[in-house]
Image (cartoon, rainbow, N blue to C red; front, side, top):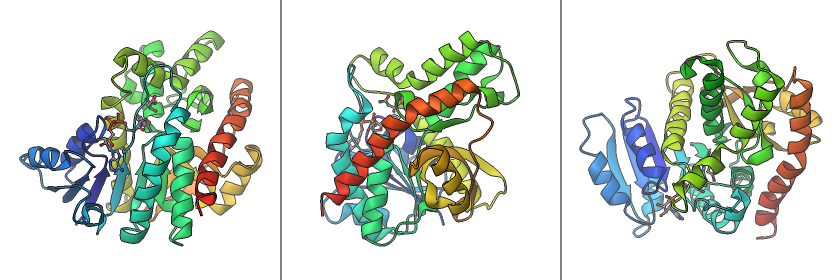
Length: 329
Ligand code: NAD
Ligand code: LMR
């Protein structure tokens, strides 16, 4: 039995993400929670002829608790999206409180679940979530991941356009965080190995870093990326299930994590990132979640500069998240 839960399931991401999870045959139970309309979404999806039993929950009658109980995997796209002219950090005011409350309920009702945070600003919401779990003494850094898969999806798409290649064949690691200059594509490590001109590298890097803004602008006030994010979230969820349920070996992904997930390599990375506690890195996933962090190495000069430029903003975002919880007590 594999229970997946979506918190924020009636939203722009939540609905298509829930649809894609309903199509995942490894999931036998799908619990959809939102403060509005989750039962309508659940009724609709429940008619699809795949194994997952779908149920919708609202806040009354301990809906959140019921949705979370027995969860193996929890995906969180709850919270407000950007409008043109806003940064992801502008969402902190509203989304920090939402994530904090959801974390407290997960700490009490599903402390062993694998949790994937989509709500922005991811650079801060993941530290917020971890701090709440620490308060409840149930924090396991191997089980908490900020979802940066959309940056990887964009990197594959944009790089393949330049190369004239099939996007499914092109893989570019993306490390750092999930906002503007904190997004660090490692085009020098693209697979299959390829060569870009410096102009192409700079144009591609900028497009990957600000891909979210491209969508926000095109949607013109009606939100940010939802469909591509649903695809990215479902892809990452299926990788987690491959590692934790099917126990498939050698599953690697990039995601935004607490570097204590792998003490040995985490310390090395903290040294290269001037002691940041959170960073998006390439990790191996195993039955217990993150089983190994890969070191950050062989960066080009240009990528080293990107890393240096990312550190101050990322540090500020992390500190803001941690402080939000420490000042709360
Ligand atoms: P949306 O407004 O369409 O949907 C958000 C949903 O969250 C709504 O249905 C709302 O009712 C629900 N919600 C609000 N408070 C809640 C609570 N306390 N508990 C449960 N549900 C609650 O927004 P969206 O476009 O789906 O985006 C959601 C979030 O995902 C935003 O913060 C956005 O910035 C972020 N996002 C992240 C990435 C990423 O790569 N990590 C990509 C795209 C969007
Ligand atoms: C994205 O990268 O598309 C998301 O983080 C949403 C946004 O605000 O850009």
